[in-house]
Image (cartoon, rainbow, N blue to C red):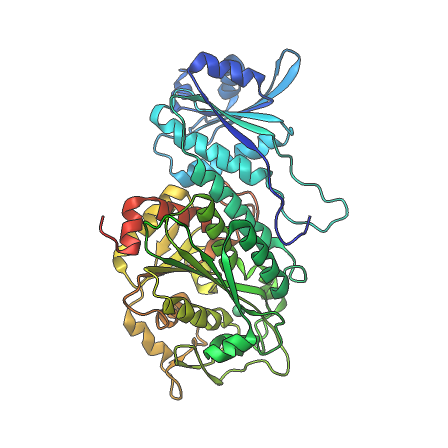
Length: 509
Ligand SMILES: [Zn+2]
């Protein structure tokens, strides 16, 4: 249960076209039913679903029935067989996030009875049905996917064999949902692996195995190669002895090329002690997951490959540990990044921006049409937003709207921050081109973005995602685990929409 790559969750998703009576018959045959109810049930107007009398009686017992707040659970019997029915009412204007949160609650109650077949049905939902069924599928898959455990008696969560969507007038395109669920699972699995299992070495080996599976070309820039490139910012961090650290370049090259090349860059710190500016114990907790940016890149690249994205994609994973040791880098050192920028080190715990500086500089050399980078970068971003949304930053303010929109649609919500050049005053150095950060910590998420923007030429549209929502106790949206894999689904929503994609890649609409 703790191999570097997750096992595949084999759940068949079946779409059953048909009206109410076919759906009712199929629902009776399932072991569990996820039922999405319309607000009309609050006024006693029920769709023709089996068990409606029992469900209506449950609803009548609710002290203050209100759509969005009601969750009805019923253990029914069909031909002597138990059927768990879990129903929720959702408001008509419910956001994707609210829908997915609800779906997570429903999925947990459904999988508790270990069903072999789950039916998902939104009777009477009309045009809203596809979104509700999609949320149901996403939540069931996320809950059924195991997380790594080295416990002797580790039990994977119950996974149904089949999820059957009922009452559909037409087939839904669920390809992005399914590919996104696998990409998200990969990111969550990698994030949860202990740091002595997912060492930089093991991480690179696992990524290479994925590359073979997906047909990506790989090139690993180890310490020697990075020395030749002059990647002094990256190498400063790894000097303390991070074995196997380096920048892994993965190239996806489809035959069909409709879109210009895209670059994805991710921070992959397999463990962050803070360096000589050592973190206190409380803040070192969870630092094995400081590689989530790179895991989101891997998950996204896998999903894009599965979806046969018609354009080249380059992924750059900055894989390292931030350790302590006699050779560790120290405050006031001046190191030179691959593009020649001299950086004055201020705080060794701001290692992410050092690693990304060189990874971005290398990614930019290939002249992609756009760069997206992902990193669990700053505490300031979490203070600003809490762990429910992630922060986005761009050198194109016009991208803010499509970025936010992709968040609203996917349920992985992002919010933009300013990247005005006068913030650079705080980063002015007397001995180098730029200071790495400040010690005050004020607006550190913005300063980090300003710092990173130096390594991306202005001609390239660039989006930096500070993954404040990478970890959320109890799960977030449809995802039930602490590590959320936030970013894969959002990126697919950003790239999957033609208008958003055209704005990011600056291609004519
Ligand atoms: Zn750090």
